Image 1 (spheres, one colour):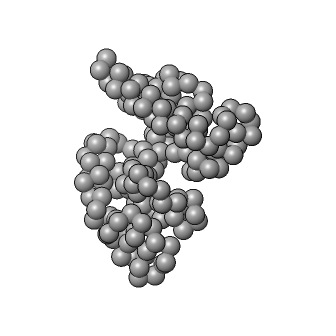
Image 2 (cartoon, rainbow, N blue to C red; image 1 turned 90 degrees about the vertical axis):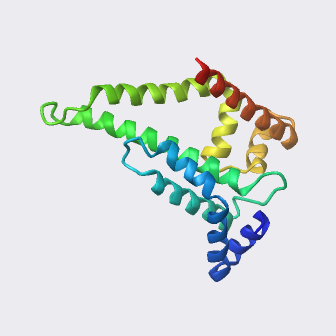
Amino acid sequence: MTDKEIVEGIKAGGLAENRAIEKFYEQNKTLLLGFLRKFSNQENAKEPEDIIWEGIEALVNNIRKGKYQFKEGVTLSSYLKSILKNLWFKQLSSESARLNRQYTYFDQDQVEPDVSQLLSDKETWDNYLQIFEKIGKNCKRILHSVFGLGYTIKELGAELVAEGVYDNEQVLRNAKSKCLKKLMQVITDTRLR
């Protein structure tokens, strides 16, 4: 099934929607298994399986609500991958906040958090923040708006063009592409250290 057929099936609802979701899941097993392998050894409140299903649910809801429009060259798999990453980063952030609340508000004698784990979690989160600081203010805003908040390029373009940040939507599309490349380069450089 093509991405376009999957989107149309989800929009149709009923049995067509079930078949489309099932086929999409089958076509993306490798991506999903890779996600599971990568994150399953970490202890968190949510299991990677939960995040996968939340990601598929978010994808389906975005298609139903018209937030996702089929575009040539942009696959549903890459869209799902960005949703999964955002959900995972959000999970890490909420997990870190939960641990901070637990440490701050509970009796220190009752709760003895694993200090090494807290430091590791904080270091991981600090690394994510540093990576996003290195790509610049505009890139950070573009990527957060598109992948974190679910803006379409058209919606974000209208906002940024009105603010005078970019001349038109195409310039924003080019900037988004450059930002993604820049982000991947910063991540690669960080891993090599």
